[in-house]
Every structure is written in structure tokens, then in C-alpha cells.
Image (cartoon, rainbow, N blue to C red; front, side, top):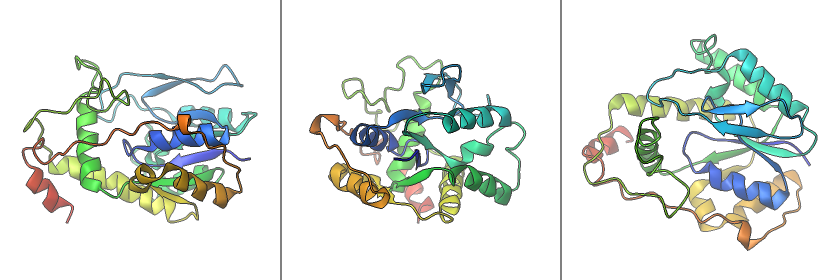
Length: 251
């Protein structure tokens, strides 16, 4: 058994894969271990404890330091049982000292960290829906928002659909989204790892888990009750005022 990292981009649906993988392979769950929106408790070497922090997602502030990244990495390296975390490759250099590094240096830095894990690359094919979901999720995750994460919560009873014509995306939003996507693609081009597609996972969770199982020689413990009910994204064509313009950006 190994230590796994699900490589993904923000709000891609990787939560569902992580939950099912951890239960099916009996892995300790480390969640998004390197995120700036998570405080981690490094005082307990036998646990992977995180606490959510309220941050402003519209600005790249409240960054971790390289020491923070290394300390979190050290905690994983000393962890005594197999685990699974998820990570976005840009997180490793999204620090005060490294955020302005040349892109090639940032790719190399991410590569040097990820090569010590058994990787699973999680992707989403419907980029427009992913892009729109990310923007609505950031909006309702702001510290002063009255109904916390109502457009992105994994609690089906609390998930809400944004009103018609209530969002507008900017080209700057699109550029930031594509930068993260392309950066992740470049990092993962250096690895040979199983690739799980969100749309395939929605259709058949067990089949996707079997890809990981066969790749790494794991024995899955499938249980139907371990599957999370997947909440599908809404139809964003009427939610974003400039949806037709968004479509042109992705062509």
C-alpha cells in the first residue's frame, strides 16, 4: 500500500473521488493538505487534522510560506499508515517568496514534490460548466456571504441554484482558470499515472476505482453505502448573463 495524491484543479469534483477512494482502499484522508484555506494541526503525528479558514477567494492573499509547505510535507512523510490527499500543483509555489517564480521553475518545484506520491490525475471534460461552478462557488464562499457555500456545498439539502442572470464572468476570470488548467497539464505531462475523468466517475464510480486498483495493484473493498450522492451542476446558460461570450472563450 502506498501514499496517494489526487492531482486536480479547484472545484473539479475531486471531493467525490477522494471520499470513495479512501473508504474503498481504507486510506487515511488528508483532504486538500496544501491549501491556503486550510489550517493543519502538525502536533499530532498520527492524525491528518485540518480546519477550514475563511479567506477572500477573489485575491491571492493569506499565502503560506515555503516553510509551511515543507512542514506539511514532513508531516506526511512521517505519517505511519497509507493515506490519500489531494493537491493542486500551483499550491506548492503559491507562497510569498515563490509566487513570482518563472513558470518553468514552478513546474519543476511541483514535479519534485509530486514524484514522491502515487498519483491519480482527476480531470473534468466540461470546462465551461467547471469554470462557471468555480465562479459561483467562490462568490458564496466569501467570509461575509450570508448563506455559506450555498451554491457549492456537498449537502444536497442546502445546495441552492443561483438566480437567472445573477453572474457575469470576465476575461480575467477565464485567463486565471486556464492558467491553472494548463499549468496542471504541464506538470502531469511528466508523469505516467491513471487518469480519472469526472464525467466517467459520475457514470460508474466502481469502474473508475478499478482503474486505480489495477494500476497500483490494490484490492478494493466496494460498499455501496460508501458512495457519495453526486450533486450535478445546474444549467448555467441562463445563470450567467454573458454565457454566449463565455462559450467563445473556450473555442
